[in-house]
Image (cartoon, rainbow, N blue to C red; front, side, top):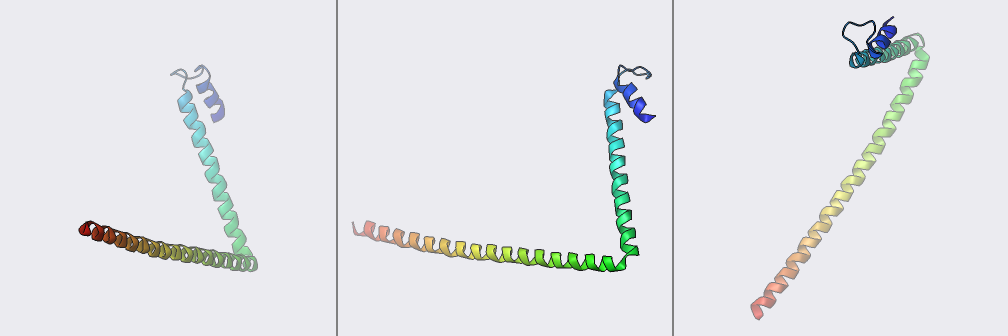
Length: 116
């Protein structure tokens, strides 16, 4: 089997022409793991699709629940954006106040320097 060959490649190279090939064996295990994960994902997606096709009432309930959840998420995002924009407006107002205070203090310093 392929697993026996991987072990043979890792352990002292017996049964292989090139000697120890642990890097190649590691990539072999990695490819095997990725193939298993893709098979699992594909099987899960097919099962969900078949379940939705054969149970239209449950599909509608699930879709309604998802739409309601999306609507709530959109409301939360809009509220966060509104809060963030309100915070930016307050930040701009406070920066304008600082600029006006700086200009006023600089003009007073200039008037003092001109007088003396």
